[in-house]
Length: 271
Length: 260
Ligand SMILES: Nc1ncnc2c1ncn2[C@@H]1O[C@H](COP(=O)(O)OP(=O)(O)O)[C@@H](O)[C@H]1O
Ligand SMILES: [Mg+2]
Image (tube, rainbow over all chains, first blue to last red; front, side):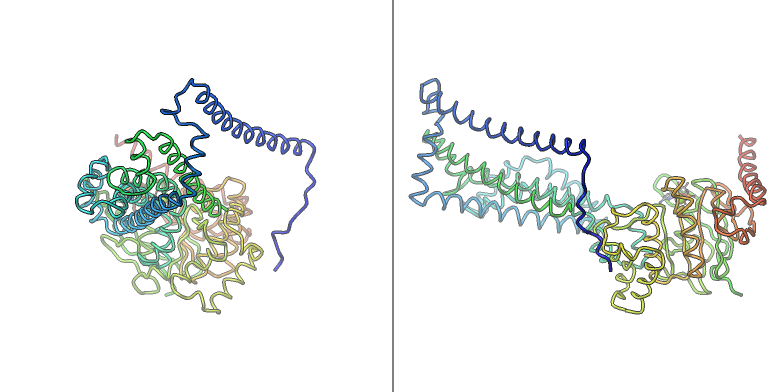
């Protein structure tokens, strides 16, 4: 067989080269602006706190954050807290995404079940999950289990609803096509419905990345002995704003990193 | 008797919460082996319903449908839709063997070789590793046809397979699809609301009334000597046939108009 995807060296016209150049230039401008903006915020923050416009006791400051970070790292405490929060978040994220998808498959499979459970799902979805907090703490105790359960409560219903909608949105004619080729319900599920929903599944992953952090931190606020959420609450209670800011900053980096990984997975699938 | 498909006094009623809709009143016709038959009728008259009944995706309320003297078996039927419905996540090859895969015959070399030769014959061999989105509309429709042929169906059901294509492509794809179906000696039943398309492709045109539909008239077409469908549109008899069918459909509209 001929190899079709031959690398062809195309000589672009001058106008096209200019077009590409402009795109590249815009990209550089945007990236530099982003970096400059960050540097400006940090710089002004440091400046204002050091000259006394802002009180570092209430607003902390970049240098104090760096100092706190240094102490934390050298005492080895930081890694423990990060590890605990990351573990809870990932566990909640994976379990919620998995369970939610399984639930969506069951609901897709049986129209009866779907109709029976519909009002419950609607109510559960509308309920602010934080209201379940005290109940969860009483049932599961203080610590990791409660936090993971909180995280699951937050992500589960939205995962189920999104995935079910995606399954049900599959083109009726495509299902007819599968049937006309003699497919049974399992084959329709595995060869059509699930692969067809990959795009939506990745969107759900993206949403769940954010939601699972919300769940974990909320859980840690309610009941915890360690973790970044614990540090933030603790820091707030004893007025150690350096600690609050440092933990928040790390949280930003972690959540951003996790989102970035999902975005990479998405890019791979889009090819 | 060499009729492959026999539709006898079929009646079909859709049930919904609000009411029941009689889509098909009473339809009978037969299709002989190797014949190309077209059904024309106003939209909403129940053409898709008839194909679903023949494919066994719906069960007739009354009447019977037999394929080679036996009750319909969905796996003996090839169904082609308005859109090609190729699966974007599969390569062209994976798309065309979908039917074999469902029947767990994807390892049957006799069958896969047959598919390969179809792809080769109809100019798609170089694209088997490509994704559907890399192909033109006409090529995609050819791939969809080969996917249907892969399971070696007894009869092909085509539900307005060209109506999603633009006019130029439509005429070309129409010729292509016709050639493939004739080359492979397939029996075909095409449904369309395009009278010209029906005349240019078919050996026999069945005209349906509007819903609830019954067969108004069956007209034999004999334009084979003019060649491919596109050429047949220039046949001297074409105009006459067109008018005849057109009048049948118009007549009904007048009837309805006078009733109101
Ligand atoms: N699932 C359904 N439930 C109720 N009515 C239907 C259903 N499918 C089709 N119909 C009705 O049956 C009639 C025939 O439909 P269809 O066979 O799709 O027509 P055509 O293909 O000729 O345009 C239409 O009037 C439509 O409203
Ligand atoms: Mg239709």
